[in-house]
Length: 316
Image (cartoon, rainbow, N blue to C red; front, side):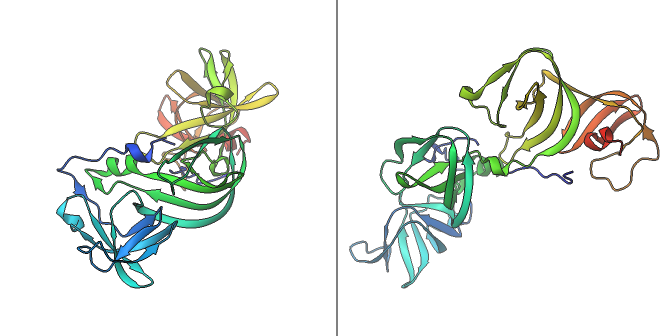
């Protein structure tokens, strides 16, 4: 049994070219690093662009020591002073660099849908190529954000994660992929009641081509995954047992949940609480008000209480 289930973080498919910058009244974030996406010239003096002293190649992260204007002047930055093998040098702001970080990876992930490929080292980002669902090797990850923000929500919405992968077309980039290996299920055991036909999917991802319509009825839920990370993006997926297969259902207001307890069950005033209530929840059918990982909040005549439905169904 999985305990102390945590939310998965970081699929809002925003494109790098369409980040909306904050108003002039916004405050810049301090910038500690840049990602070099294309080969970029470096200079000893940002006032002398006729004499470059070298080139920083892609893809790598460099440390920022200073900016012009300074970041706290709340103006768009024109130059970055960065650490290099030749000492501190100047880089001009352009589409060749971006605020954020980059690190190398050595990981295999499963792509479950057709995925667009990008080339961040060329003028045209989109390659027009896609790859079919398959396992791919990730060799790097690049994350970027808009340093000109007005609040925490703006920061969250502007954050993008690009994965550098090996393909038959060479090393390419994919944007915010759904990663099946990052889905951490919490075991549950209750019933899902559909009052009308609902869409279900092989994975906790709404891919139109993979959609299956399921008629109204009562179905057992076996697992739950809470996806979150970005503002306004928290969603709950339920793994539902259908005849001969399991499918994922996106929870919404038209779906109700019930748990039927056949034995007395420990009840808690909050999830993860170490000491249970002195009273036990009596056998019966209860409406589930909300879920948090393997924990469910049920409504009773004496108020709301938390139970672990998977343990309850096993008589724990």
